[in-house]
Length: 199
Image 1 (spheres, helix red, strand yellow):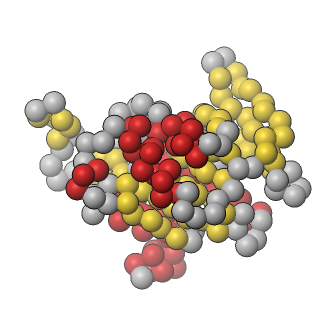
Image 2 (tube, rainbow, N blue to C red):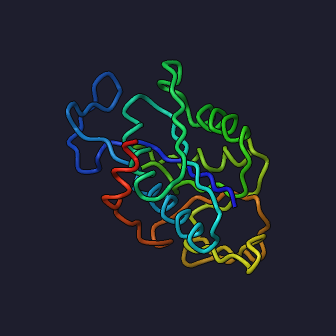
């Protein structure tokens, strides 16, 4: 199975911020992988463990500093990382971010696309669904469980809804899901993984 994971760089959730010229400013603060995206990376790694031979490609769009979160994803267990970078990407809205990601993803084979539920910076939750529309594949949001069939051709997917859960049965690949807290517990990168990611 070819698995795509889209991740985003965000300010550390503990960073002190201020608003300057209608933009968030936090000089000197660290950037981290969006916490919801960590659930997506972890789920991809677990699927790969259950289905040997699977291949995980991580995509992220942004400035040079994005390479650090891509290295973290590789250290966790992803196989390949793609950094989409151009000065023209600065300040793009969610529609165009999804369009650029979709254009890049369509160049390689894929069976499953995983995203975080939303970015913890703007809380818009739009890129995942918009990406699925560009890729012309079904999508489910706020997913808390993915149970694949024995042949990994379809899955029963549990998603969080107001007041409870909703189960969608026999969803056929390819599809996109946005991952919610509770789907799994993301691992810390191993020392071996960190050293490999540096290469």
